[in-house]
Length: 119
Length: 151
Image 1 (tube, chains in turn red, yellow):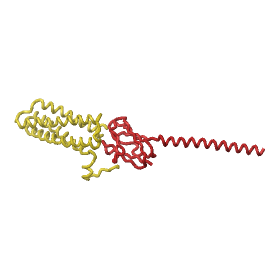
Image 2 (image 1 turned 30 degrees about the vertical axis):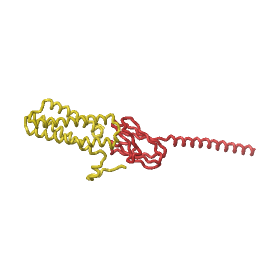
Image 3 (image 1 turned 60 degrees about the vertical axis):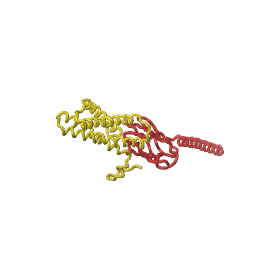
């Protein structure tokens, strides 16, 4: 009788461990996938970048979309970022591979500024 | 990166990114519109003083188109790195160029008439009207671009 209870307890423990292992590996796989395909978006609207400050992980691709009726650009002073003139609904993407703070502005409207912090 | 404009700092004013074009463009616009208004008023009232005022307004308007064109082209080359323009930027370039030519042409007609001591040809007023429309359109597009009007 006691032996049967012990076997049941062991079986339950194995099942729980297996379940934890499976769910953990799925979670890990999902997080790896997220890191590989991570992306972020910045909308340009009403003469401003939104969000003006964005924090992303290294390897993230950031896409700027011009939702304004006016052409804009996305340019950093060191020219790491340099888009062409973006008309309405046009996009510009850049993949940040190195950690750091990337400040940028619109060269047509230099008062428009933003930054991307890459961790 | 984010810079706060320092008021009364010459460096900030002179080295601001293409801000000179936006500032200077107001001179030919205002002077030309005033010149045409004085010219039409002088013709209407037959007062010589108004015709004189018209001439000097048109003279300085024509002269001030040069730095405006220069700063506009520099902004295109430096800020946009000379990339091919399209849409509203191209429209601004085309209307701005046409306006500059018309402003200078109107002044030239006035200059020639003064030098010859002759009356202005009748078509000059029509050219002035066309130029006023072109200047207004250029100013509107420029204001739209800069976010001053309709942005």
